[in-house]
Image: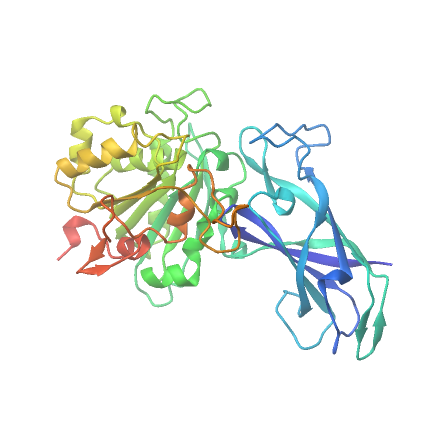
Length: 427
């Protein structure tokens, strides 16, 4: 007889993956002896775009790769219905192995334009008996899906902004405002792969939700997060594609969305509005601070894609007062730092910006210790993915490899950002 299961997904450095499966055995499990070999997990991923949809080839993978197969169970325990460990009860939680190069656990996939959600169906089959204080359980099969929960996903709310020419959708997080204080606003602008029509992906396609984790929120005393989504690309200058013209059809819409969000959330501290994003979103970060430099307290562009030769000397002078922290990697072959961030950073320094910083990674590697190359070295990501260390708050060094400091104390990028206020309000 088939039974119910549910899943929990976590946003890893490499995107949202199902890392736990919760089984409702409908039997008391006190005293259960559990081991990973007791269950087998078969997964089938299907497109939400219809049975005839053909996945494009991407990064060397065949179109049907990672759409069906078996997951590796690394651990299991008696739990409650939400996956929390328990001494007794009727639920078992399976912990699943997730890896940057194994897409079977992912809840999204690149469709040729953007990352989109996929349907994930599991069949969990019991392979070995489980002995409990109440007896022995055998032959259980779980194939009735009660749904997926995304870690931090229930904290995100969805909205839309009806601009007459370029409407935008967005997700946002609202901190506890019961203290009647004003709270800063962090704006994140997604990369090219996170555009489209699923606003939650703007905050979960990459590890943006780390910005609303308790560890990061404490720096800011509770901060709003706003993650808008462009239906095409921020770098779209009118033809629906990525353009290198340096123009964007979304500048006015995004400017008005920010204004509307601040006006409808009166607890936002307008002296502490921070804007950043990666790649395509790093481009848009630069466009927005050049458009309204007086609005922002600081900016944090990551592998930004506004070519330096598209930025005039006058534009550089307009942001020479603004605190900015760039992040990029030498191994980035998508956005060449020599044509983008390096000359822009140097021009800002020459223009007198005394609070501009630039963490320039040699390469982007796993810092968790969970993933290694064949030679045992840390797993290396694509050089373009420098948003990984930034969103993990690992940026600490400036362009000259010295620590960035506040009042003589070394700080991380998010500690630095939390301390910034608009220039006309600083004492």
